[in-house]
Image (cartoon, rainbow, N blue to C red; front, side):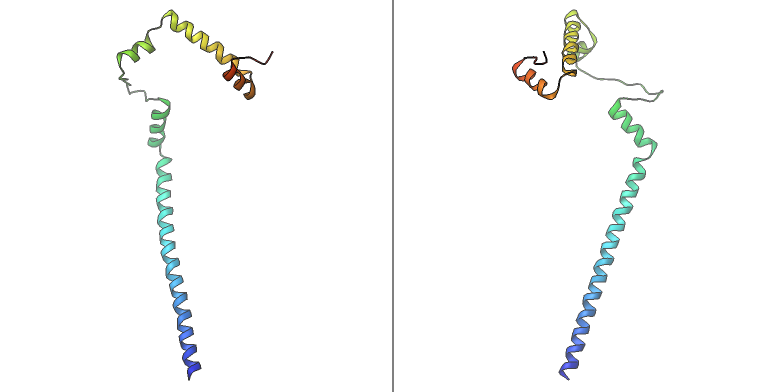
Length: 122
């Protein structure tokens, strides 16, 4: 009699474990499927022309033919970028020659140049 009771309880316990695992897996499957659906909607949005157009406008400053772009800046920034004086032209020429110096250097030579202001390529 005791053995039969033991068998009944052990089978019921195993059945409970199996059912609880099945329930857990069903819940996880619904969560995963909802995440997949969410990601699919996100990917669909990212592949639309309107999103691509938005990204191009934000990152690359592009605009459509019918649009007009207005930049609002302070007067100092306006004069900095619009008016060119001889000093600014000389500064840009000097910067251009410095960037050419860096182009042919290795990383080690660049660090030596930055730290000690010596060109060791010679």
